[in-house]
Amino acid sequence: VYEVICLSFGFNSQPGEDADPREWKEVPLVLFFTEFCDPVDNKNKRVIELYSPNKRNYKIKDDLIVMKWEGSSAYPSYTYQSLKGQKINSKGHLVLCMNYYAYSGNICDVQTGFSGVTKLSGSEHFALAKCTHPSNDCHYIDIYGTPGTIAGAAQDFTDGKVFRRRTVPAPKRIYDSNHWVVVNDINADQCGAGTTPPPVPAPSPGSGGGPGPGPGPGPGRGPSKGKGKGKYWRRK
Image (cartoon, rainbow, N blue to C red; front, side, top):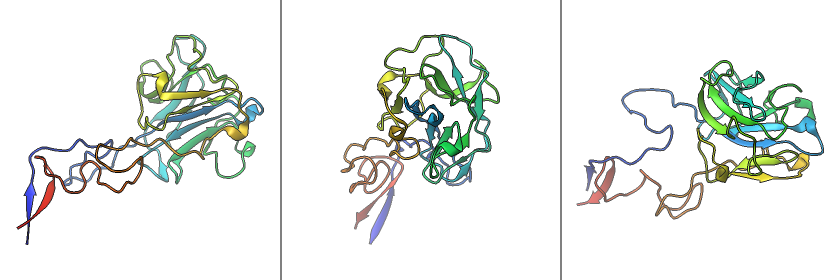
C-alpha cells in the first residue's frame, strides 16, 4: 500500500518548464548564439550558429533578427538577418552561412548571401533580438560583444572562431568574455557549426551524473524527502 504525500514548496523550474498543467500553452522558444566562424583559408565559409535546447524541426514564429554593430559604432548596422519563418533543424541548430554550396551535407540552414550578416570581420558585436529591423530599441535576447566599443583580444575572432562554453547553455543579455572561447588562425574544416555538441547544463547537486542523462534523478524528479510541491512515495 502506498500513500501519496503532496509537499508545500516548489522546485525551481528550468527554462521553458514552468507550465500550468491545467492550461495548454506552447512552450516559448529558447535560442542563443553558440559559434561565429571566420576561417582564414576560405571566407566563403563564414558562419553563425545558433542553438535551441527545447525545439527541434521548429519553424520560428516570432519576429527575431540577428543584428550587428561594426567597429566602435553605437548604432547597429543596416545589415541583418530575419529568422522569422526559418526552421531550426533536427539537432536544434540554426546555422547561417554565406552560401549553401560552399558546404557539403546539411550544415547550412539559412543562406544570407555574400553581403549579409555572415560577412564577418571578426571584430563586430552581435545580438539576437526581438524586432523586425535593427534598432537600439530592440529587445535583446542574447548578445556577443559590447556595442560602442572596440573588440578586444578576448572577443575578436578575426581569421578564427569563437564558441560558447558548453557550461553556459542559455541566452545572456549582457556579454561576458568568460562565457566564450576564441581560437585564432583556423581553417574552414575546423569550424564546428552544426556539428559540435551543444551547450548543456551542469549537473545538479546529487544528480550522480555529468551533463546529460545521469544515473541519479535531477531536480524535480525521483524521490524527495524535503517539503515542497511534488510527490514522494512512502510505504505504509
